[in-house]
Amino acid sequence: SAVISQKPSRDICQRGTSLTIQCQVDSQVTMMFWYRQQPGQSLTLIATANQGSEATYESGFVIDKFPISRPNLTFSTLTVSNMSPEDSSIYLCSVALRGVEQFFGPGTRLTVL
Amino acid sequence: KNQVEQSPQSLIILEGKNCTLQCNYTVSPFSNLRWYKQDTGRGPVSLTIMTFSENTKSNGRYTATLDADTKQSSLHITASQLSDSASYICVVSAGNAGNMLTFGGGTRLMVKP
Image (cartoon, rainbow over the protein chains, first blue to last red):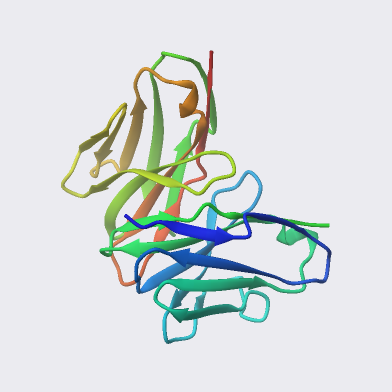
C-alpha cells in the first residue's frame, strides 16, 4: 500500500487568492493524480502528474487555473489560482501502484469566501 | 460514454442489520471494478478490487460480487456497525492506456443505533 499525506488538511481563503496543496507519498510512484470532489458529489479527475513531464489535464480543467508541479517521484503540488466560491471543494491526491490499485490521500477541504 | 450508476443514493439501516448496495456500469473495455469507502472528510479507502474473472470477493464483513455479463456489481455489508456509516463509491477501470477510472455517484449509508 501507499501512505499519502496532504497539506493543508483544510483552509478558508478569500476570493481572488491562490492556494497550493502539497501531496507527499511514502514510496516512489510514477503516476500521481489530482481529483476534485465538490460538495455531495463524487470524484472528478483534474489532471495526471507524471514526474519529468507536463501534467495532463482533463476536459474542463486548464493549467492556468490549476498549475501542477511534480519535482520528484514522491511529491506533487496543485495550486488553485484566482479562487472563487465555486472552487470550494475537497481536493484529493492519488497514486497508482502496480497499475491496478489506487490509493487516495486524506484530502484538502477548501472553502472560498 | 462510460458511466457508473449506483443505487440507492442514500440508505439508513439499524445497527446489526445487513444491507446491499448496487452498481451498474457501462465501461468498455472493462478492466476491473473497485469499491471504496469514504468517511466524511477523508479520502476513499479501497475495500475490494475485482477483475473480469472474479465474481465475488470478501473483505471482512464486506462482500462484493461482480456479474460481468450483466455489468452489475453489489456490495453486501453484514452485521452493520456504526462505523460503517460512510459513502461507498463504485469505480470501474477501463482497460485502455492510462488510468481511466469512472466513478459512481456513491451511496451514502447511515447506520443508526
